[in-house]
Length: 155
Image (tube, rainbow, N blue to C red; front, side):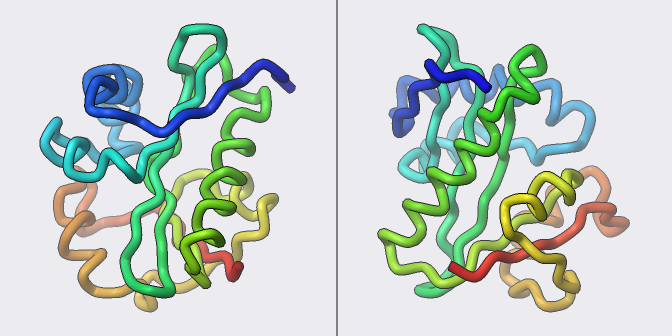
């Protein structure tokens, strides 16, 4: 585990760094592409992880309703994976969700075991709110054949 990870909320100055870090995962279809405008509109939902002065990871907590939020775009730079940064990011987002009054956190992921270790349980995709499917999933290069697993955590 890395102990010197610092977290901060993103600002508009971080938009290009966010896009650059996630680009390989977008290219492979693991994470949905977000335009600079989409990232900017949702900038307050992003939490960034730094080691020294380098951006090494980030994720976003997107609010869907007064009780439901979603962890989106969890990414850790390849050379920093397996060091607990993703775990720390998810825990930070869980705390943020609790502070906001959220009751459930959703995620769609290819990393099912990672999220299960953090207390998430698999749910049928059919139980995800429709506005989520049409607003995000339709943009995916794999749509309508989805191999992601949907998981939820009650908090």
